[in-house]
Length: 242
Image 1 (cartoon, helix red, strand yellow):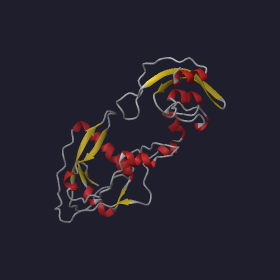
Image 2 (cartoon, helix red, strand yellow):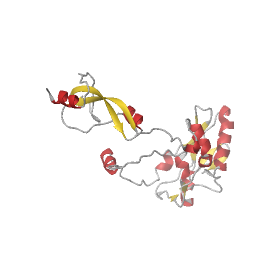
Image 3 (cartoon, helix red, strand yellow):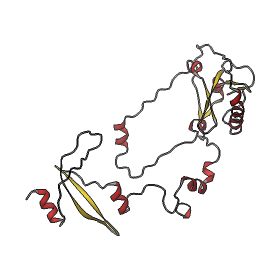
Image 4 (tube, one colour):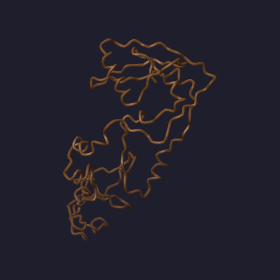
């Protein structure tokens, strides 16, 4: 009797042959399988029935997502106690914590400083025409950005002026983009080394809690230093802003 049959006999479960293919992480070559069996998996206070696929060689047992959730050792989604009730939708979660989703956040005690080369001659570009069908939407968007403190009127003479590009969104609103190609030629780049995937996985070693953060209007939450705002001046049919 082979090792696989001996082990399943010890567990008092029926061994079976399998055609299932199992792949290790980032591999395109299937592992060599010996067979499969069904057994009861139990932890204190909970148990479930699971199908096990046995591979050739040594390795650690791995629970599937389905088995882990049935045993209660893996939870995906919001906890049941959120807002003292079961939260099944994002809308319910947002309503429970509405104060966290109002307005635009601001990174505290930090201002972004742009390094502008004095050797590059400033460029003043004319405003591009905005289609009449989009002008009302552009006005509403600009007023909203002013109200939120994201942009401000550019007063007095300015050596830099860039045009805007109006991009219609699927929600029937518009996105105001600034064509900064000329201005970018005067910016000294800050170089930051980006860690590789292997380095990131090494830092996550032995970590047990993971989260995902998605900043709403993330770039608008960084305040520009007053000396750096002049190069961001842009032209619209309502005037100059920065």
